[in-house]
Image 1 (cartoon, helix red, strand yellow):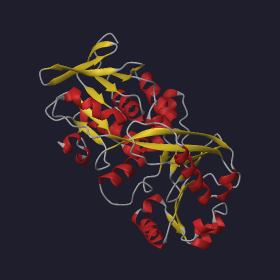
Image 2 (cartoon, one colour):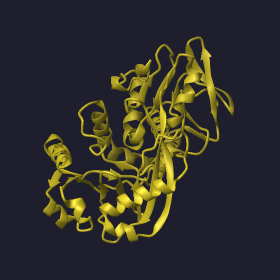
Image 3 (tube, helix red, strand yellow):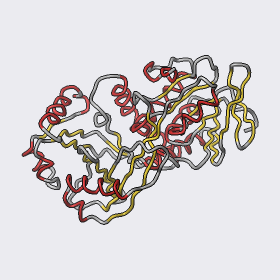
Length: 370
C-alpha cells in the first residue's frame, strides 16, 4: 500500500478475516497481518458447526449473539463465495441433539416453543428410532431435538474465503508477518511494530485468538486480556453409509458429516496450556463416544486426528470492542467454541463501532475484567 491503511487487523483466523472483510466492505483500506498462515490455529481445526442452540440454551447475550450471527450466515457465505471464488462448503444439514436422560429431554423439548422461528421439533424415542435407524438403541431412549436449519462449513475455507473476498475489495492480506507491539502517538495507537517494520495506521484491531494474553503487554502494564487456550482434539472417520447427512450431537461427542465423505468427531475440552498434541486418551474417548451414538462408527475407517486451541475467557463471552482510554485500538478475541459461528456478527460489530454506529453488545466489552 502506498499510504497508511485505515485499519490494520492483527490475526488471520476466521475472526480476523471476517473483520477485514467487514471493514473493507464498508470502504476502509485494510491491511491484515498474520504471523503464520491463514486459519493456521483454531480456525483450521474447528469442525465448523453452526448450531446456535447447541452451544447453550440459557437466555442472555451469548445466545442472542449466536442467533443473530446465525441469521447472517446464508447471505454472508454467498457474498464471500461470490467475492472470492472459494466455496466454504456451507451445508444446511440440520442437527439432531440426542437427550442423555429424562431431564435433558425436558430441557431440549422446552426449546421447541422458545425458538419457534428455528423450526425445531422434539422426537419421542419411537419417532427417533424410526427417523434415525443408524443411532444406537440406548441413544434413542429419551428422544432428541431436531434443528432442521442448523448447518456447518469447512472453517479453513471460510477464513480463506473471507480473506480473499477482502483482498478483492482492496485489502492487503499478508502472512508470515509477526506483530510485536503497538506504535503510539501520545495515548492514541498509531500502528504496529512488526517483523516487516513499523507500520502506520489510525486503527489497529487485535484478533489474536488464543494468543490474546501476550498482546496485553503491548497495551500497557495494567492491561488484562484473560484468554486461555483450551485444547480440542478431533477425529476424522470415513462416514458410515447408513448415517444421514445430519449433525448428531450427544453428551460426549458430536458427529459432523462433511461433503468429502469424512465424518468429523469432536471434541475434547482440555485445559493444558498451549499443548497441541493429539493423545491416545483423547482419540480413544472420541471413538468410544462416536460408537455409543452410532454403532457403525466403530467399524469406520480411521482417517486422522488433530487438535486446536480454543480461546476462552472467564465468562465464556468474547472480547469485542474498543480498548478504554486508548483511541485507535479495538479487540476482537476470546470466542471460545463459537469463533466460526460468531464471525459475521463480530465483523459487523467492529465495522459498526469503527464507523460510529455504536458497539452493539456491552457484555462483550474488552475492559470488563479490569
